[in-house]
Image (tube, rainbow, N blue to C red):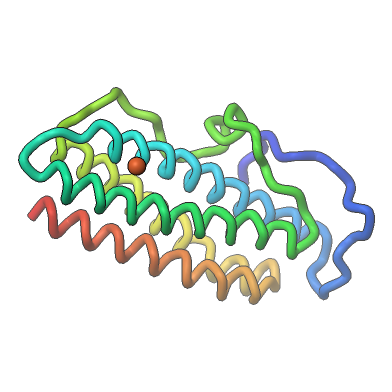
Length: 168
Ligand SMILES: [Fe+2]
């Protein structure tokens, strides 16, 4: 379990939804870590949307736009899931970089390098989410978050497939 920064506020009312406070706190930290990864990935995809070059420019420009649009929805869903279990979301860029598993990379306009970086990122998120789904359900008794994360996992599996197809 990470000991990294998490927003520290006290909600006006604590959530009385059947999850022990220490459990919802552990789940909120996992979700804030996922949120941080999603934010790093979102920013990277936007950068690639703007800076990609080559004969497939327009195809990739649109592909990346579709990806970051879906990531923006996921980011909102992850942040609101944290609120639903009674915690606050991380929202500072510096905290995202501190929490995230994903790394920022050197600028690149090369489509293959961009796709390889994005594939690594989506697969990293898939492994992180998969690793914690059962723990969140069985150890922390938060079946709602476990179910939610199954949907998140499938979105990242889809984009990992698309990227492997480009790179194949
Ligand atoms: Fe654009």
